[in-house]
Length: 279
Image (cartoon, rainbow, N blue to C red):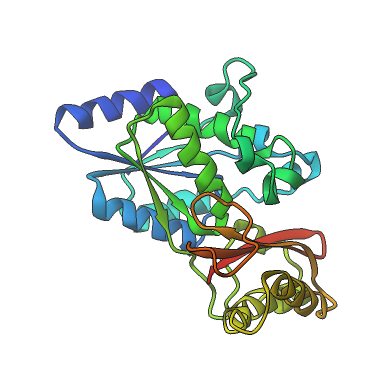
């Protein structure tokens, strides 16, 4: 396993692999790795010859400076974990390496950035577009792997790939959960004991909601989910939306012929958690 910190060194390695006819997979991360990230790398290893993992806390996607400051950083632990599962290349750049000049590009994701995370975190998805496109330009992967916990983000990245005409296959991978049901997230390490103990109530509620589709309207089910989550004194719902799994259009009637996903954002104390479940 090679750990590189500069674009020049990374591109040199990738060019060598390309000369050998090898395919390249990329797993972009912000570090503080857990089993969810590792599952993406394992999937990448199965389907491409070379697994590249980037570890970079991207400042342009944080609309809250305190959130950026608070985000966990564990590079030594991360590289050690990646070594155990056979990662080939780790890219650990500085901000200056990724953005030698200020990135002033403005993406237009249309409807996709007007709902859920887009509506509540202004500029967030523009920052995602900036960093992921920079990584795509540097690595030129054949495939890139993303976890479905960030459901809306995958739709944004697929849209960006079309806009910029990248020939990259975006691979969505299932959410990995703790035994309790809590979706694995780097932010889980920031939860205090009480909030961590109560956070699994989010997924427990989503699982129950699956069984109520036949008995409730869309709006009634959204209200029921909100009330159930908020009945736990350690949790406060920010939003509950039921959307089309491809277009993210809001579902208003169960008779609509498409796959539907419940997406939620919940505050557990100062920590904001997101989750989703396919109905």
